[in-house]
Image (cartoon, rainbow, N blue to C red; front, side, top):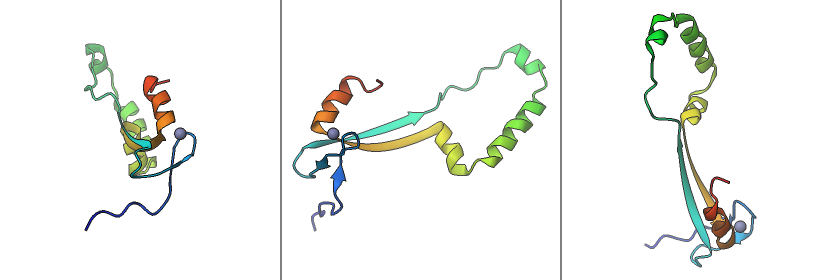
Length: 96
Ligand SMILES: [Zn+2]
């Protein structure tokens, strides 16, 4: 059975114009944002210092966050819908 077109209306995430699946009048933009994946660098001075107090403070902070919130701080995946016009503007300056 072929997939049914989605029943709920779809709107451009920028200008909120209604989009029409199947008519090719919009773009699906998938964004993956990952916090700096490089392993942290430690200098010799860092290693000499006693970090226990600092680590305990950070752990206490993390415990206050829900798991989802903590996850959102390092990784987020978003899907946005843009109409043709908004996409053409956005793709020229996505970080703007
Ligand atoms: Zn738009």
